Image (cartoon, rainbow, N blue to C red; front, side, top):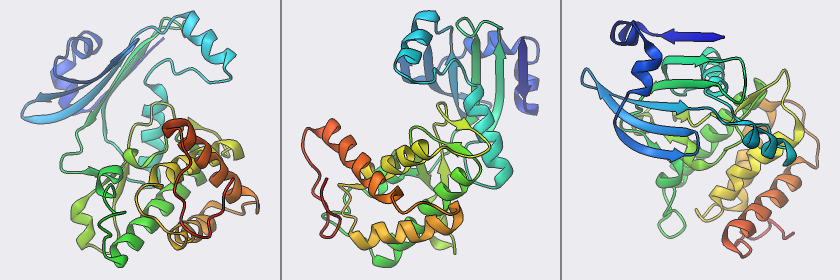
Length: 270
């Protein structure tokens, strides 16, 4: 089995053998672990990111299954997630080239090229010092609403991110001067798409957001603002959802830092 997509630029540059061209790319390495490598490279004066996936092997697949995790065997998940979000009008990466070959899931090879989102800043970096240097309230409220709406639209489509942290939402600084703040969803290689998102995956995604915001000076009212913007766009949700989200976020924090988070008054402890 072989699937290929190249836009006009990459069709012209890689037309003869896209796989050889993709796996021959050199550039600035951002990640190089096991079977996966992420690099930034330039072509014709423009910056791109490429993710290369080599064979994972049956040992890795079995290890994930034993841990009740769905193994990521290539770039297909991310390509499909990008395609879905683009169709929905949710800002994300732009796929320029994609390829996958092989029928054996343990031996597949794949690649994905996306445009470099130049000038964007992750919400993790943008909000990092808000605890000691609070932003204007109006700015904070606009970003919270944009994040909640983005998550709701993503979840409403049946897509769960599985790495849903502030660092994977890129803010377009230019949009701060516009009516709506623009956030791009990135790093979708573990994403899953179903007709309807399962509750436990919704909880994990939302807990990832809450966990990564715990040291950014967000208040109980800020959490309520997020909930108020998310809930009507995500469909009817059960009353135990948000307590479960908070408990999961606190567990993530304790696991990561070995201590309990300094929660704002009124958020409770668990």
